[in-house]
Image 1: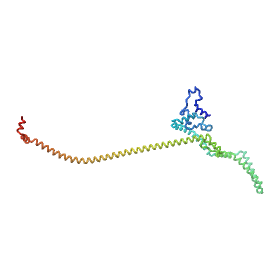
Image 2: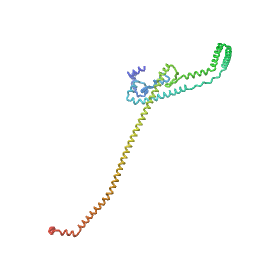
Image 3: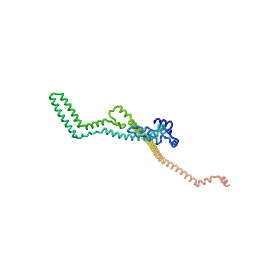
Length: 343
């Protein structure tokens, strides 16, 4: 019926049976609406796993629509929503498994518990009288068996011994019946086994058909799917955390190498600056050493030159200012020239 309904929904739409009035307020569901079951979208819905079993979760309150699931799988946002939906499903399944594990622990403790046999209750007066009669009969029969044995009547003695064994069995049954019942109960309890997957009690060494029926049952398969999904989800999370850790370590290593490279570059620059400074200082010392010697030598030369120049100037001034030389110059001019100068 559900398959036929889904087929009609696919062919005619989910609003095929609505009236015109109902169609006005009808809104087509999308896979990301809150009314849609996200568990069904991404993997499976736990409500569908335990129908008509002791672990039945009831009907899922959300919408399960194959068309919406197909739309979700084809959506470009599929990969970005899968981790979120899987996390919600894992949280729900973890609660289921936690409750089941508590049930399994209680069952395991019940099977492992040693049941102490209580002391036998006091024998009533009626049973005490019956025991006295039985013991008296057994004693008399044993005396007869001994007499017959001494007389060589072996067959008769064996017949009486069989009667003695019957009386002993009645005596044991009369005195130890409660203990026997308790021992049988303990033996039956120890024959039970516990399924670690779904928490069901089984009969140990049961027939293969019954074991197969249990293994293929909804409850066993359902909890198996839940446990497998949780194991896969945890493994994926561990793998993602490991990849993230390796990525962080790789980035830290790259940053460390970059810092070392920068430090090495700075160190080389510093060494280059230091070497350049040392060379500059060395050249400065060399220039300072040559300059002091040149300055001393140059001062003497300049002093000599300046002294000779000064002497020359003084000699020139003394010549120009001498009266004899001036008069000689004036007298050396010709009279014609002087007369011409006057005219």
